Image 1 (cartoon, rainbow, N blue to C red):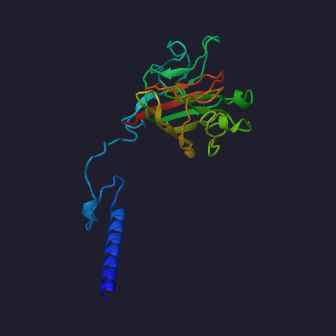
Image 2 (image 1 turned 90 degrees about the horizontal axis):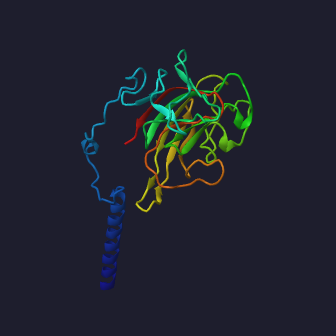
Image 3 (image 1 turned 90 degrees about the vertical axis):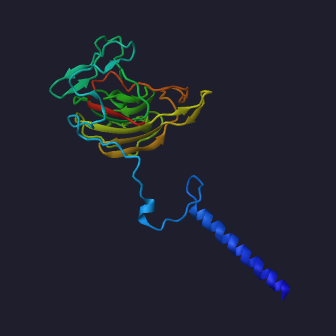
Length: 267
């Protein structure tokens, strides 16, 4: 009888410990703190911090907290990447656009913002030339670089196949787009990009990869892709430490047009 009693006590203690263990596992949140299960709706409601109010069209159709990089009136936010000289692209006042242009055929006319950025939400609109010229990578080719290092490809791919990790909407040479969502050649495309910058430690080692999400004409083409490193035409991506950098629009000897470019910094 004594042995049976001891056995029953042991089983009871085991059962109790097991329930306590399960209860703790259920009640732990991501910080491993033991939480008491709420019994009223008010216990799971909080009122701080209060998000800032943003008027989504407060700046002539642009979010009120955005930095307008190009509204069709001037190139004052941009310089030529090669020598930081004045940007030489052509302004089209009727379309409120700028067109890739080399004032001097011997100098690449790639441009970049005067301001430098880290993590951002970026909106831009672009179109390839209506007059079709060239094929493959030589038709309506440009690109937008985040922090001056990581390229989202711009290309006229309509009836124009190329390597898929270099087609429109790709993270160039790294990530094939989930879909091709181009409008007809010569019409305006939109890119909406969410970009989170990479992080590096004091020793210069990358501790967190950059990530990018891209919507092309409202269609998801890059879904939180982890960028492997810098965009390289030849060779593997590199991961040298860096800070904020400019947004760059590429001159690839094709008169691609851009308009309505704005950015919101992600803190």
